[in-house]
Structures are given as C-alpha cells and as structure tokens.
Amino acid sequence: MLMAATDTKGALSETQLALFEPSGNDDVLAALAAYFDSSKEELEEHTRRVDVVRVRHMVMYILREYGGMSFPAIGRLIGNRDHTTVIHAVNKTKNEVTKDPSILESLTGPIAFAEALKLRKQKVEAELKEMNAKLYAEAMAHIQSSKANRLVLRERVIPEGI
Image 1: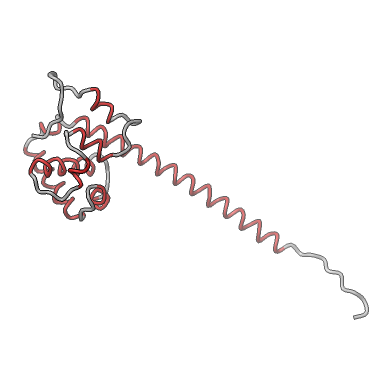
Image 2: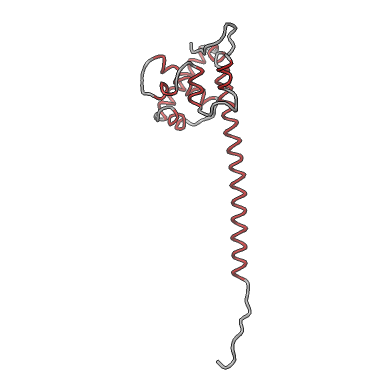
C-alpha cells in the first residue's frame, strides 16, 4: 500500500536512512514525508487527493502510536488540523493495519524514527524536570536566606535624655 522507495532488496536507501538517524533532520514532518516520497507542504495543505491523504493518515498514525504525540499536537504539526480529524485518521489507519499487518513491515524506518523521537522527547522532559527542581530549590533557599536576614535582631541604641 504505502511504501518507500527502496532498492531491489527492499532495504532503505542511504539517503532515506540518513533521515532517520537521531542526529539527522530535526523537522519531523519533513523527514516522514520524505520517507513516503512526499513533501512537508503536501502533507500540510488541505487537499483531498487520495495519494496525499493516505500518506497524511499514515504519518498521523505513526506519530500517535509510535511517537507518543497527542492528537492536538499532531493536528498542529500537520497543517493546524482539528484533533478530531487526527483521531479519525489514526482509527482508520489502525483498522487498515489490523486487516493487513504487512503494512507495518514496510514501515520499519518511520516507526524507528518516531520511537527515537519519543525517546528524545522523554529525555528532554526529564532534563527539564530536573532543571525545574534545581531552580525551585535554589529559589526556596534564596527566599529562606532573605527571611533570615530580615529577622536578625539588631541592637538599637536609645539615646539618653529623650
């Protein structure tokens, strides 16, 4: 059904493999579109051409099932579509995959890319959580030291004769 351009043995070309390396293209949509011999602009445009719709649905499915992205995030990524549109596309593709599991065999590259994206996202989220905890601890320590400095009792000399 949807297959990438492969060599005679069915393996991905070197150009396509480079797209799915973790240090490769940071534009997720462009990388996945390139796998399907499409362009990012085609996936984002609001066309109903069957060839574009199939690729768009497959990309939405991969990002949801293997990339762990939310429906609204996928909708924003692919041409600011409503999340219900993404839900429909994912469910439709899920049904197709259930009927013909061989579809997944042809998608090992994009699935690996989406899983790598998910791992990178989790790593960044963990780093952000750690940084927030550190900043919070520093802020609390600063607040405590400020309070302590304000509460220091100072000896006041009262002049005689008043």
